[in-house]
Length: 547
Image 1 (cartoon, rainbow, N blue to C red):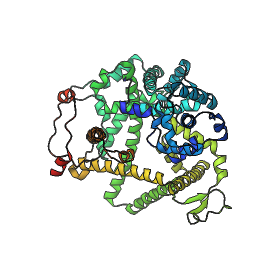
Image 2: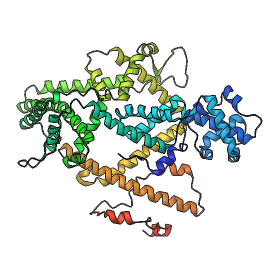
Image 3: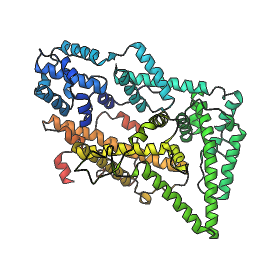
Image 4: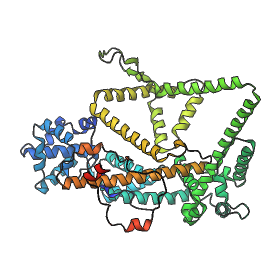
């Protein structure tokens, strides 16, 4: 299992300040309270006061202080400087005496209750990460959860490289723990059965794994029988009697997905400790999916029969319409309504009067707060999926208390967000920038997938996944190429003494495709790429105009 999962650029970014900090976070973490001001040394220079205050807010915000304090966003430095009545430029003079910053940071830790991580802290963090890795295996998510956990404990975050090693170790231990929890299932006969999944049958030319990986492409009677045969086979193998409750649904789905995307040869090369849990999860999840698939195929086949016979067609359409309207109504009630709501009816808001069309039932939220927290915890820990939760809420004939509480809380969150959006021009610009980047990426994908007018026409799920995976691969290749060469151009401009504003860089998109030819055949020789020691020569402006 690889230890490092971040690029050098990502490590550098995570060990430094964010490129932008939203105004709300600046106000929350960098506003100096009366107690904060007492801590700031009064007898020192303006540079020392500003540097101390910025480190205080930074530790409170990030949970650590980047080495280069001068890279803090200008908006943050200006906000803190105004509170201290000093010039933001004073920051350039801070830290000339290295011990000053060290002493300040030590005092700030004591004041905020932070401490440096000890070996025991890191050992306990790794154990905590093992539990999280059993729920969510994505390393970047585990990194974010680890940072949030340390911040909550007021332990200063160590370097990203150290956290990478902890996460790699935790994922390895989670793999071992998964095997241990499934050990009662993994008898000798069970292992032989699992290994048999990977053996290619001489008569059919494929393995049982490939047979089970293939999902139904049509809803004909023969396909229903084939699905039921697969389900019966899983039951004969005793899959329905396996107790996998020691693993979270997220872990089971993650392992099953690995098997669905892997060949039998790739799984055979894996060590037993990794291979067997993957196959157990695959069979268990496949049995569930086959049951749902058989019912869905039967419903579709029955509907098609009704359609061909032209019997009760109108009733069928009405029922479908009712089901659709019910889903729309449920979505609108849980959070789809775009109206704004107030908490107290007595307060008047002259400029927002036409928008505030309802009132939030605060008591309903408070009465059901514990249930809301349990729902949030179940979703975050992976014990239930969002689709399953919505399905359960939809199945109730009348809205229960939880649905009503979710509706009220959704109104509150949405109203707060829309008001912030209306109030903050930088927030609107940032959202618009991200939307433009998303549209640019969507445009790149449309440009690359020009065949069949951009429609995925494969029938088999495996073929669809392969086609989508190829599109993602080519898209990432174009984005990576553009990013590398755009960075080279920026470096060239700076080396030539040209001014390059960070705000302009933030608006650049690596999803450009004017220079890409999507037609023909491309051949990639890996050895040539690995032997290349430098980038291609950059074009000069005169060359660009001539083209």
